Image (cartoon, rainbow, N blue to C red; front, side, top):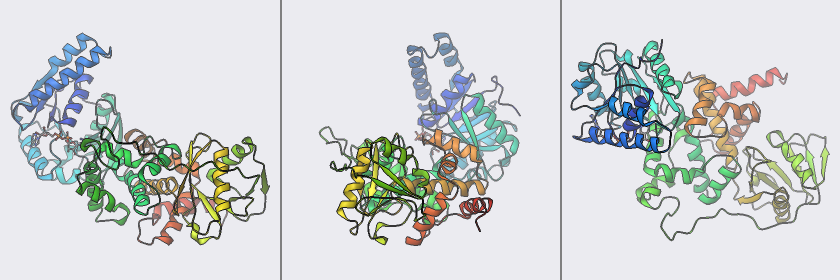
Length: 504
Ligand SMILES: NC(=O)c1ccc[n+]([C@@H]2O[C@H](COP(=O)([O-])OP(=O)(O)OC[C@H]3O[C@@H](n4cnc5c(N)ncnc54)[C@H](O)[C@@H]3O)[C@@H](O)[C@H]2O)c1
């Protein structure tokens, strides 16, 4: 099955933000493109706006004037749906409302040929439900572009329950021919990206609700320690709190209120107060002209410990030993298997976040998972009221000696990065086990769709097969609501490793 012939006209219905972007992609790929919008004059406005964008590409030397003129000649604003009759593909990008999309598809089916591919750019509705009204739902597929469509490479090609394999393959090949990176996925709430990204927001908001730290500190930890491009608070301010909450809400509802996707009360209040983010001048942060930039909590300078004793294998944090030695702090290695931790001169312990809380141990400081301990510029620590001040001070001084800023959080089981990554890894295993997508497509989708530094499976391989299961199991024991319950797929994954390694 091949992509659409370039001589085949393509139509885009609904010419707002997404429709214009998708139309530009098809146009630049070489198709004739028809635009249609229910609001009078809007299709022509969209054609003008696309033309202006092509002008800017010419100004930036990214398109020749001849190509621009040819593209403009292929773009046509249609006055009625009937003008789309000879199109080989129609992509709808109208209002995100089931009945509106269904009515449009019924109307389209009366107009276009039998072999015209019909597609929806819905981001949260069921492709199966939208296409269910068609006489031939086999030709209907989800083509989920990301905003801005001309710039972002990812397209989720979503097969509804009734979508023919040939239609999905045609859509996939077409997205590739348009210069995009398609991933194939089943019709599931949130598809790949919006399903697997939920914990990134939810865990940050939960840590804030639990008073572990303020938004600026949590964001700094996600960026500077976790390697995420942006923190959850600043990112949702950019997306719009109402838009981000609506996605969370619809995924949660579509999963029959599965507790793993429960929306955040703190975000609800923010939306209720009208603080929707950058677009209203205020969200988690203040964007007013005289607003002060919120700074993360950063610990005062503390003395580095005279030495540390390393016990057991530090797992994902083993790079730390070399860094500590390079910083001139002697490391004594204790081969006895007391656990996996660093013991400080105070007698207190420094342990990688494992899902337990620091109140369970007399004198412990937890440190968060870093994407790369050498490159991380900040480390989060958490302590409880039972942690000796000397232990906390030595822990702070140790990481400062490695050149890191240190943020001290309240007692936070699983810290910030570790539990966020563990939950994303779990949802990824769960989704693949349920046939939503392949591991490779999941990794591609999360790297390209939300810019994660690693795909969940790359992360999982790096952290060790049982790591995510162990941390979630501990969190689940402390919060038995089900939010952290590791999936059967993750359990199987961890258990299979144990068997291979010969452990009972
Ligand atoms: N904005 C995003 O970031 C984004 C990203 C991915 C997917 N989506 C999805 O893309 C679709 C469009 O979103 P948008 O942000 O471009 O919306 P938008 O509000 O910018 O544009 C929607 C357009 O559809 C038109 N319209 C409404 N009903 C119509 C009908 N029955 N027939 C023809 N035209 C009609 C409106 O006049 C408007 O011009 C939605 O399904 C949305 O969920 C949006």
